[in-house]
Structures are given as structure tokens and as C-alpha cells.
Length: 243
Image (tube, rainbow, N blue to C red; front, top):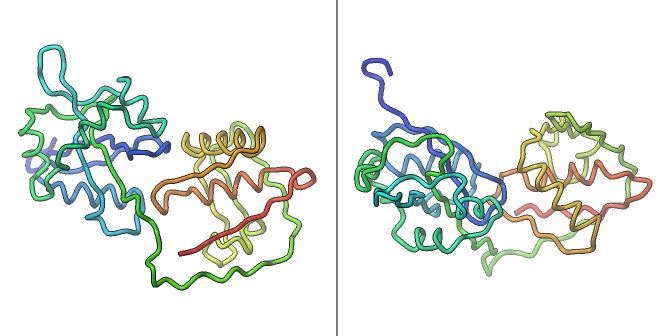
């Protein structure tokens, strides 16, 4: 670290009740927990007030009785990847969230925590679950359009990107409306969502709910999956609701 440069740490954060996996956020130790909340909100592209986010340090106790960061291969951490809250995690989040006015350094000093390292989970993130509309909201009007022939999207096994052309986006309510394509990174969360849709909608006739904070790509991933299906074998009814 150069002289005069403020010390930074990288936290691996896990969104609770989400199967999208963990993500990394960098922050200065001199910044307050509120700034960490802002950085996480920007990463997740949230549209709700940031004060609705709740944060906790993901810690455990080692054999010497010292408070340490939660190892990524701990049973509780493994269940987080599946969107499940382990009883130990429940005990952590039953405590008060990180105090917004304290700096990262002060919060770490409270538990005598060392700087975060790789292969650890550091921050647990809870987004608000109440996404219901106000009672005064005007019901949306459904505008039905006739069926259209769509090109089949071809994605090879080794492709790192999934490109949705305007011919796949037109009329779906997704996209900027300027006839430009949308590019998705074929990350682990996208592949996991595709496998789950395939399992529930193709192999069986289960009802699948894909949940998570707004702006995290759920609709785009679902639309891309629909476009990959062979139109000669599958008819897809796409309903898009924009709040």
C-alpha cells in the first residue's frame, strides 16, 4: 500500500434467501457501514431505499475461542448457496445489524477480527421481503398481443456470453426499446437458474418462482432460456409486469 493511501478490504457478501451466489465488494476501513450498504446496493442495482438493507458480519468461533470470519466450506455457508438459512445463520441475524454510523475498522475491532481473506464469507445481506403494491395502486391493464414467430437463440456449451438480439426482445417489455441487443454474462447464477427452469418446466410440470432483489437479471435470464427453446416444439407465453 502506498504512503497516504487508505487501507481497503474486500468483503465477500451473501444475499440471504437467494441462490445467486456470493459477490465481492471493496471498501475503505475508514468508511462507515452505511457506505458498505451503498456499495452493496449499487452492486445489486436495488430500487428500494438503501436503509431497507440489513447487514451482519458472518463470523464464527475457532477452536481457540477467537471470533473469525465464516469459512466458505462451513456447512452454514454451503446452505447459503442454496438459499437456505442454517440455524447458526439464524442466530447471527437475530442480533442487531451492523450499526450504520460505525466505521468498518471500528466494527472489526469490536470482535477483534482480522482482515478478510479469500475462501471466507464476511457479510450477510438481507433485502426487504415486502414487495406488495400499496392498497391505492391502480390495477394494471393486460394488453394481449398475437403470437409471433421467434428465431431460436443458439448458445454453445463454451460460450461465455449470451446475446439476446432485438428480434428476441421486441414486445417483451425487456430492453431499452432502441432495438439494441442485451448481453448476459454466462455466470454461475445464470446457469443455475437455467438448470432450475429446465428441471421444473421441462422435465416436470412444477411451478417455479424465481425470487430476488430487482435489477439482478432474473427476467433476462428467463427470457434467454425461453428463446433457446426450439419453437417447433415449444410455445412460450410471456407475461411481463412492469411496476
